[in-house]
Image (cartoon, rainbow, N blue to C red; front, top):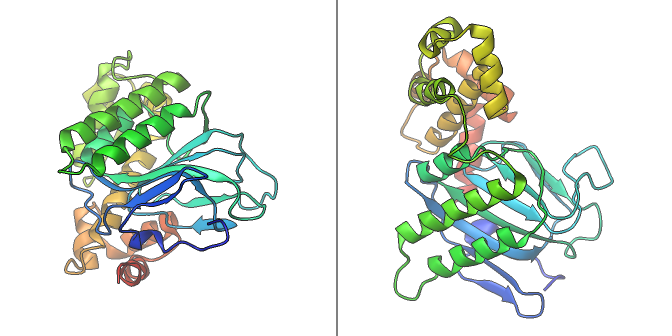
Length: 298
């Protein structure tokens, strides 16, 4: 199996396995459904790396959650591995991705899931899981077991239960949070920080004024910015941009929506400002991104 190139992941429509290496993977669907509650798009368990490098400047349209079983290279300019074995990384929609072993392809293994939906977003955020940041696990079975359980449910002989799938993903998120020591939903995050975050989630496409947010929170502007960064590992302005760009990225899959309308929906009155920010984020223009995705989906 290691000497054969598998079909493109977008075309996997049946389980592939290797009894000797215990490799199993399955792709469940091509269409992006970001506004769904939860959609499991694909799962792979202990899959051998078949490409020396994977370089996606604009990432994928969904969450890619990946565990590297051997030391991996996540820095493009670095030839030696930059992470330890059992490194987990959670890439959000649209985040650039690069990973490589810098050795012979088809030997090292990784486990992964492509997943999306509002339930997924909520679980990752509420458990404060680090995003696009390498995380070293002490026990990789916390990933393997949950992936296997989700795979089994998705391939249920009668019909998978979406509630069970949601619970399995929630259990995965909480188990990862517990192992790496991040705060869970019961953490002592100040209520005003959460209220500001919820406000930004709802009104990200409107003008955001820090002084108004500070007034809403009832604290000083500097204190709010410090607390927000401490709990979400990003600035308020970058959080808003990320929300806008992730939403724009998803809207671009609908060819019936014009670029000007997308710019307006995500908070830009000027299409040129929108295009400039999109290209800065994804290293490609919105129109070019749309064309690339249409080619991939054919």
